[in-house]
Image (cartoon, rainbow, N blue to C red; front, top):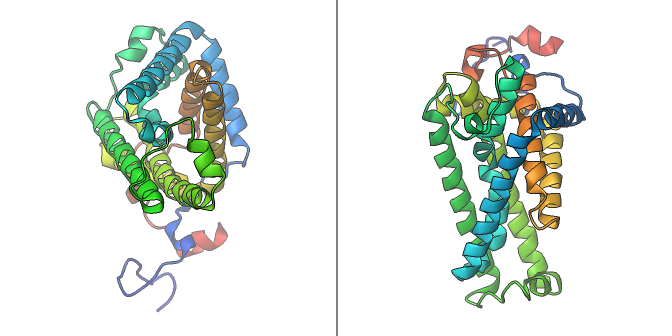
Length: 289
């Protein structure tokens, strides 16, 4: 049997990594493409900056209110997992920012009302995706609590005043941080892959949530190196926001939201070019690529 005639997908066979890639979904992007997306996002931010900054201020107040509520209810032990989980649901919270960038691109009027009351072309499918991301965030928070329990048993949470001492001065704390970071990284990577392009796509096109999420994951996988670099940029800017007591979200969140729209416009396939529609790459094309 020749390589061209070989059938993949059988339970008795294992495909290599290259056989999971689709040349038609690869964009040959430079590793530093994120700089262009940030520059384009900044241009969108400073054009009619009022709605974007008000949007960012709303995200800041919402985050601050959540932190205060967790403290008041005695749930401070899930504060750090909740802050990390923010990155899981952030793409759907940026829907209004994608709408502003789309409107600027189309030469349409920009207003805060249009950014808040968005009418995605996919309708309720975008909210279905948002529900899935919220469930994923809750699953991550539960996993984080279980990791703490596995290392420290039923020991009460020491409080925010002593948590850094517990984690940074004891070998058990170092081990818990390493394991928790690894598990959290898996959650974050999966959430990033299924949402980074799916939410803008659901705003921009009439498609269903599962197709959009599958297409997003395929695009990330087929452009892995630049997307890993972009994920690192997003993480770094989020950490800057945390270092400023979340105040940085007022500018950084809309900046990243607008930049993500331009990432979508750069990487997104043409309408109808889903991973399934693209089909397998012929053997001669794979060799040529």
